[in-house]
Image: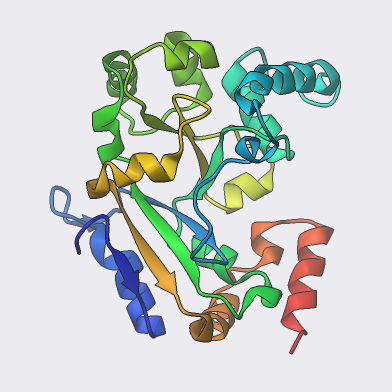
Length: 262
């Protein structure tokens, strides 16, 4: 498989091949993927962040949004002083941020391609990004922080000592870069969805544009509209459902509503 390419699948078997055939690791003789995945109901949906959609000067508004979130949420959340913990909490609760949601599970990504039954007339997509190779573009201090931890992704605890603010992130180097951040286990949804976030070094940087300049890092799997029902039924049989991924009464209700819709 060539990175940077677009693969259109036409059967469940081809879906599995596209999403799993690249996961063999010769160094350990095991299937261990270096990729993370993001599913969207439409192939035309890019990788724009929620904060970029709030209007003009969103880059100026970012620190104000986060500062006020911390101010008013303090009695309801206690993620400590780390801006990275607060950013994860804010994203999780719907505040517009520069973060994008990803998962280590291709099946969870497929769930989000097929979750909305009203969107079954459009082709969907799974974005697949090599988060291990993306380390090559990190500034040296950030690479060293990961190396000392023996990790390929950051946690707030690893990132905070070397980079305590969003402003300092942008000051590491002139060239834009992406880093992947595993959030704290804020609730069962993050755990069950095998979730992590990406963020660009500049709030105005566009991840899709950055990836197009580094095509060895990604590929896209196009899910035709006509294949969505089969994928949805097989995910349900494999227990990849709202009931599991979004524990609680709301997730249970969403699953039952969809399951009994024909």
